Image (tube, rainbow, N blue to C red):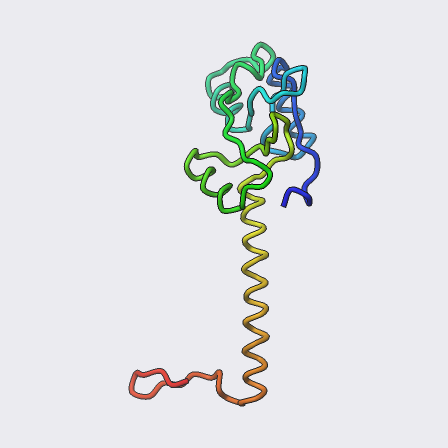
Length: 156
């Protein structure tokens, strides 16, 4: 899944909230990974953080910095973790974005939207295969896939 995604957007941990909001808008993303000067992950900041901790509180986005509102204890995923593990972690910690980190280095990002897209693609593939199988059976045995009811019972 990560191979199909673009670059993960980051922001300096000491950047202003306005800079973070602008970076999210320009990148079309809902969160940024905050990093130290050496590239290590410092935290994660989301649109929700800005809405709840800055806008709702009436704090100036110029006076506050990413480090003031970011989540410093980042829940992350390793690159070899299965999709099901990402879903479990998101559910357990009530997060919508999971940085993928290996050896302290940011490798990618997985969002709940990414997971839904993969699962939808997978479900559509199963539906396509099952429809094909039913069509083949129907060609071989016309009417077999039709249902009828007799006295409230379904006949196949």
